[in-house]
Image (cartoon, one colour):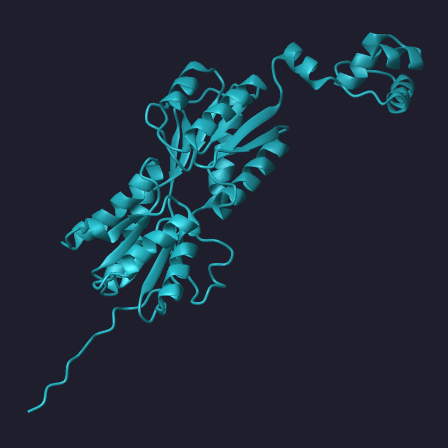
Amino acid sequence: MLDVAQSAGVSVATVSAVVNSSAPVSPELRSRIEMAIEQIGYKRNTIARSLKIGTTRTIGLIVADITNPFFTDVVSVIQDVLHRAGYAVMLCCNDEDTRLQDEQIDLLLDRMVDGLIIAPAGEDAHLSRILASTKTPTVLIDRLCDGVESDAVVLDNRRAVHDATAYMLNLGHRRIGYISGSLATSTGRERLAGYRAALDAEAIVFEENLVQIGNFREKDAYKAAMQLLIRADRPTAIFSANNLMVIGVMKAIRDIGLRCPEEISVVSFDDFPWADVFQPHLTTIAQPVQAIGEQAAQLLIDRLSGKEVEAPRRLMLQGRLIIRDSCRPVPIVTTRTTA
């Protein structure tokens, strides 16, 4: 800044006024200073400025799996809203690993981010301690974490899966296989609870061996689906608790030599762009991605703006069952008798 001032023949205070827009400067002086800045290649020291004013205008965003289209879409919305509010975003992916997540939170706090938006990897005592001890405003998305008292935007997972399971039951399916996400996450537990609640409502006995853990991963879901499909009493329908796992489920159905939906029906949590390109077109539960991203970003902006709000605020949104072609009624098997 001193070099710019000397080149333009002005004081450092005048250069500072132009760079930081902190005071009015005449057009003639502004033009000289901007020309000197361009010639010298001066760039404002953002770190030094952040230490001075106590804010970095940066938000730390941690998601569970950036390869999952759901998280990719939510990130896009959050980034757009925050950008319009004047914030940059530092993105991290915890890859469903709580230890990596803890390291990322420490890193982001060291970088003095103004706020955090996190999709937790699982129930993590360290996460609870960090967020309880920091004054950095935090919003959880998609998942909750026991012991963390912060704003959150989540889906009513239990109701969404209950409704999807009820749809399959109404088509006559009584043996419905369930590919679950990690039960270390709130979403994994809530979605399984919705499945069980739908069975209870129809007085259908819950069979533990019809539930396989796919950990929200395609490869794990493939193995889990195979465990169901090789059974002599295999299910007539399978519910996949997220969009990546349904890919593994469909591959398993193909490799075992079955036809969907003629021989086995499939429903998946999470809609995604190619759901209606699959053959058959997949019946899915769509999450309100736009609303999740917008509301999460706005909750954080409210905190950062100093707006008086209640704490914590928990927003629970609703999913929507999109019926396509991958689920059919159970075929009625008739036997012919001879006189």
